[in-house]
Amino acid sequence: MFDVYFQNIQAALWNKGEGLVVSGEEAKLHMMQGTGTLVFPHVASMTPQMKMVCMQNMQQQVKLQYVLTQAWTALTKAGIRPVLMKGAGLAALYPSPEQRTWGDIDLFVGKDQYHPACAIMRETFPKALKFDEELDHYKHYNLIADGISIEIHRVSISFQHPIDERHYARMEDFGMVKGEGLVVSGLEVMVPEPTFNALFVMLHSWEHMMTQGANIRQLMDLTLLLHHYKDRIDRQRLRAWLKALHALDVWHLYMWMAVKYLGLGDEWLTVRGERLAVRGDRLMNDLMAGRMVAPKEESKAYSNRLARKWHTMQGRLANARRIGQYSPAYARHMKAETLMHGALRLFAKDRHWE
Image (cartoon, rainbow, N blue to C red; front, side, top):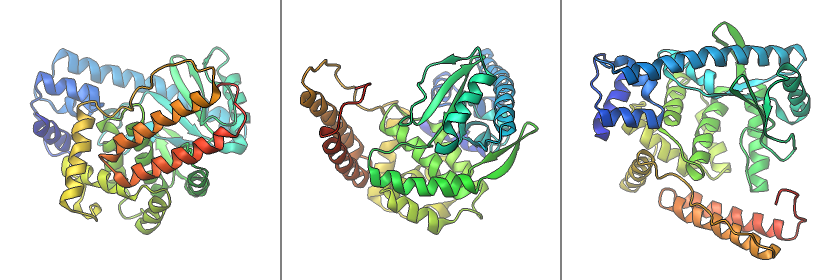
């Protein structure tokens, strides 16, 4: 079943065929993996459910575009320079933008513009629901306007290890400062610089792999990004960044999956071998089966501070062991990161949310 599933994705992704045949089980997979809106328009006889999925996505995009325009206009009018991440910026790389679902709006503003941007969003959407506190250790501030989630990012990715955090901050500064213009449904926006965007899209997907689960749509995003910007991505810089973040082996896994399963150009697969193939196939199979979710920590109320921190550390080490079956190199980094973070937090004061 997976063979036909990926054949249909490749046909739709690269505009190589119409009149696709999708079984009921495959349709469920497409909806679970976020690939239905790409494939269903190419199906010879769309079922009512397939038509509904595509129609709902188009209606949602109209709503998202309206809220994005309001948010973008308000921020730029106030002199704030946002950068659009994920969502609409990546949808522009698809054969048709409506073939990529996006459910929220992610705007990077950076640490200096973070608090002013949050205030402007509250003024622009006074009736919005607000869930996140505007705190400096959070990755983003979130509010929901007219049913659309808007995330104002002070950073694009969070890291536990302070060295990783410093390395990535420099990469992020490069990628956001050198962002480039893109027109999304008539609205002129800024998106990250292509080399950094490739790094970010992969790391964002990997973050999901390590925590709450990922999907094939995220791999499609990276595949199309690499294909579209293949002559502009600085591969030497990208490799150096990946090595600095201990993520080069993870990148090779993604390239294996993108080339084998999604039809990305073979030139992106710079490392080959049976071990990589076994690990890449294992990762893909677990992703398709919905098994890429971190072990659920047993909820316990510890009155003893040391016991609470020990329990948290054991959960993170268990997750590192899980990741080790896909990338032993990154799992070793996760373990070192967990031990260092645990040691630092052991001698620090408790934060109010702990």
